[in-house]
Image (cartoon, rainbow, N blue to C red; front, top):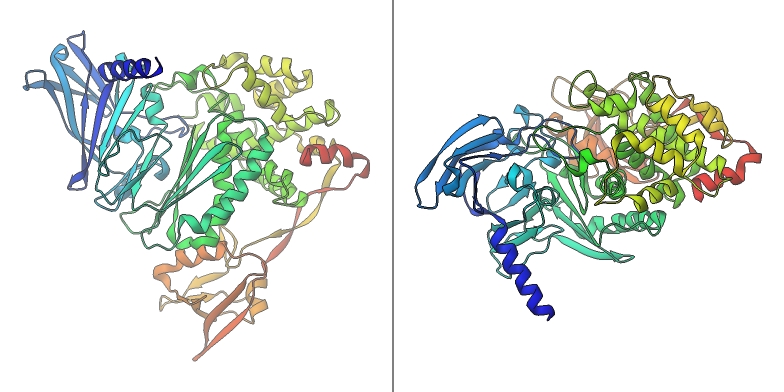
Length: 600
């Protein structure tokens, strides 16, 4: 009986689905051909859309700009009239006869200087080497079939393997077949094709896939997996029984930084996947340090908005999006969790967590602190609101922290913001969105009136948050702290090194740099090599990125030239530090409550 039902379901799926085929085997002029076969259409005209924007990007990317030579073919094999409506849509005349459409897809990585598409949401086409298939850049939709199943087949070279959270239903070494319930699900399932380099492990019932494309084999999946496994194990422990997916994939593309390669570094979340783009030159250690923060943030998106979200996200309009008011939760609470779990699970110290929050207060103070967060969120695609988007990772996280503190104080440490998110998930969840305007009332009902008052005054209102008042509830007060810097940069705007007229890298004179001083390096010394790698102006970015990964106490060897004499110096990394205003935990009478907040 079970087999009969299964076969009937498969037959029904095949009959009603839109079918897309991506041909990765016959790449011509760096373009991939796509063919989309359609079910029976009842209207004389129909419009095919390629997304203007996708969930999680908060930007207008116009993926239709990278589509060439779109043609429509009737059931009789003859061409149909196609009218280009705008950058992202094509209207097909005589659609009742439509059998399929075909077109060519250009990638975004090799022309990044000509557009603003964030690399982790873009596309890469390198014949026989790598294909970063963010599906919205390759396959579009008809509004009439938004809830119709999709079947996507991918023809690919035998030596390439597709890393994805979807299940390949084809056993062929040169073809993959995937099925999804609707277009929105297809968009949320990217695939990275490359020579196989992946690891798999399981954490509390969740299957994890780590896939890496490192063109020069500088980084392997095996090398970075231990750190990622430790981090994700800690995240799962922090989340407890909050579990929204059985499989999660991390697709990591490492850029060579060439003129035709990706340069937008970071990550983009999906319900069961994260796409990451980073420089290959960071190496294993540098990359591991970056992934701890970047991937942990994206993984926590399984809580929100991937599980808890409004109708604006559930029924996302890819070409005329209506944005939700609640970026403070989608991005802010997610970023707060990405920091809180690290102190909760012992990956960072209590003081380091407070220092991170202090840094976010400093960053947020440079933004428009009186702009209502809900208004910014709802209008984030247009100026002046889009210019404030970066604040979701700073003030947004601080909003989450303050809500957490209120709930901890009112519940005597028994509950926090994670409990609030679990309650929201139980009431709503991935398939049941909330009403955007009703969220504050829902949260207030689940928590305390003080939380509702905070949301109205500081999130929907124009009043800046008095962070010291909220810190004080946990026994945290203002004080001095030592802020650690980086070996070659005081901060991202103030370097300790420069480039001389001979295109050589040298240490700037008159600069107090504890890293250089500990190694006996002086101002005007020319840096020739670091840890066996030669550097000059042509690869100075590689040097900086590698040095960001150097940790306190790491062994380091530099080859320098002082005047005409070359010498090699070795020692331990000492990170420069400056005394800054910040926050410290001091009140002993609040120790139990503070422990519940940070360790509970």
